[in-house]
Image 1: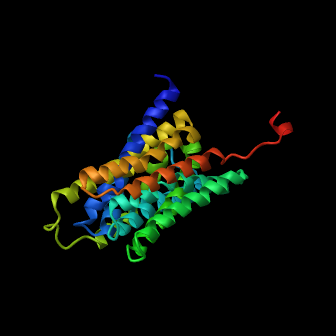
Image 2: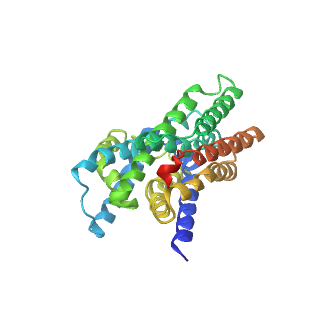
Image 3: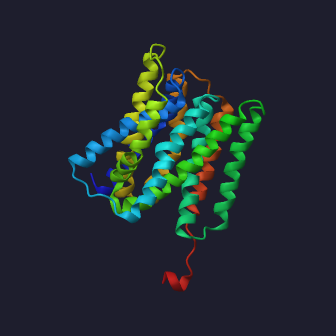
Length: 296
C-alpha cells in the first residue's frame, strides 16, 4: 500500500473513531457528572500519552511551542469534551451531531485566519449558508428545545476548530501523535486535581454502559483516534484527508440511532446533507487564487 492510500485509510479509521465520541459521551453523562467525565477522560488519556512519550523517548517541545500546546489542550482536551458533555445533558446525541458538520468549516476558518490567506468570496457564501442551515434547524425544533444545549455545542465546535488548526500547524514540527500526547501531558496536573474535586461520593448508581462510554472517550476519542487521524493527515495531506471528516455526522447519526435508539428524523438527515455540502464547498474555495505572474 502506497503512502497516499495509507493516509486515506488511517484518516478513515480516525473519523470512524471520532464518530462514536458524542454517543459515548451521551451514555456516560447519563450516570456520571459531565465535569468528572471530562477530567477523568483527560487523566486516563494523559497517563497513557505520558507512557508513550517515555517509551519512545520523544524530545521535549521547545519553549516557543508551549503556547501552541496550551491552545491545543484548551481546545481538544478540555474545551470540546467539557462543552459537549454539558450540552448532552440538554440535547440528544443525534441533535448534537448536526453541529459536528460545522467542525471542518471551523477548522478551515481558523486555518485561514492563522495563515493570513484571502479565500475566494464563494468560501464565505458556503460558510454563511452552512451556518444558516444549522441555525434554521435549531429554530425549527422550537425556541424551547434547548437554547443552552445548542449554545454549548456551538461553543464546542469553535474551540475544537481552533485546537485542530493549531495542532495541525504544530504537528509539522513535533509530529502528529506527539502533539496530542504533549497536550494531554501538559493538562494532566490540572485535570487530575479537577478529577479529585469532582469525584462522585459513590459510584454505586453508575451503570455498566456509563463505564463503557467513559472508557471509549478516554481511550479512543481522546488518544487512539488522534493517532490514526494525525497519521492520516501527515501521510495523505491535511487538505485531502481532512475531507473525510465530512462523513462524521453520517456515522454519528447511525451510531446514535443504532446504539442509543434515538430517533433520527428526516429533517436531521436533510440538514446534515446540506451542512456537509456547504462545508465541502467552503473547503474547496478556501485557497485564494494566485496572480498568474506569481503562479508562473
